[in-house]
Structure formats: C-alpha cells, structure tokens
Amino acid sequence: MGMWLIYALLSAVTAALVAIFGKIGLKEIDANSATAIRAVIMALFLLGVVAVQGKFAQLGEIIAQRKAMSFIVLSGVAGALSWLFYFLALKGGKVAQVGSIDKLSVVIAVVLAFFFLGEKISWVNAAGVAMIAAGAILAALK
Image (cartoon, rainbow, N blue to C red):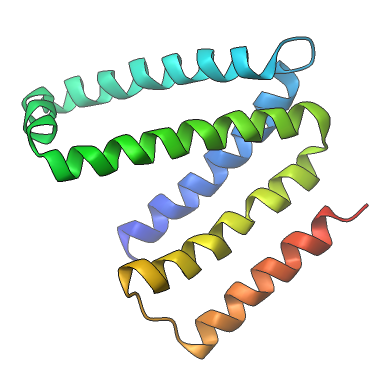
C-alpha cells in the first residue's frame, strides 16, 4: 500500500470529522464567521507544521515563483469558497446529505483533470466515478 493511499484515507476520516464537528459548532453561530475562525486555526496549525519541519525558507521560494504562486492563490480562493458553501450547507442541511453532495467534487475533479490536465481515465475508473455520482445523489435523497 502506497503512502498516498494512507494519506487519502486519513484525509477522508478527518474530512468526515470536519462535517461532524462543524455541524455541532454551527448550531447557534453564523456559518461565515465560523469558517473564518476555522481558516485562522488552520493557517496557524499549518504554519506550526512548516516550522516543526524547518521549512520556513521554502515559503519565500514559493512566493518568488509567480506561476506556482498564482495557482496556489487560486487554489486558496477555491478552498475558501468551498468551505464557505460547505458550512452554509451544513447550517441548513443534514450531514449525510451535505457530505454526499460534497463528494460530487470527486466526480468534478476527475472530469476537470481529464480535460485540463490530460489525465487518462480507464473504463473501470469511469465506471467508479459514475457510481460515486449515483451514490452521492442517492445518499442525498430524503
């Protein structure tokens, strides 16, 4: 088993915890304010990780690379919008429904990677992606 798979599984588990903890925390507060607080906590946590790894110098190197920095900024904006919409959805919807629809991001990412990054997809992978889409929609139904 490759490290990418372990990291992907850990990502799935921690993403599930985001939904559970977020839903509990959103009961009596504004979703956008909660998202802002979450972003600050994430930024501080990740700066701590970079510091512990001794990689602060790499931050300057990344900033100096315009193309890389431009796409990292775009990724950050997309991520922030994703969190805003996710928390707004959690505020009004059930975790099972919001989480299921959110997983359509897998389908969208595969399609975008095919068209914009030239990533290949086999028929078996395409069938899996189609099942993810169908499963997300079925799981979100009342």
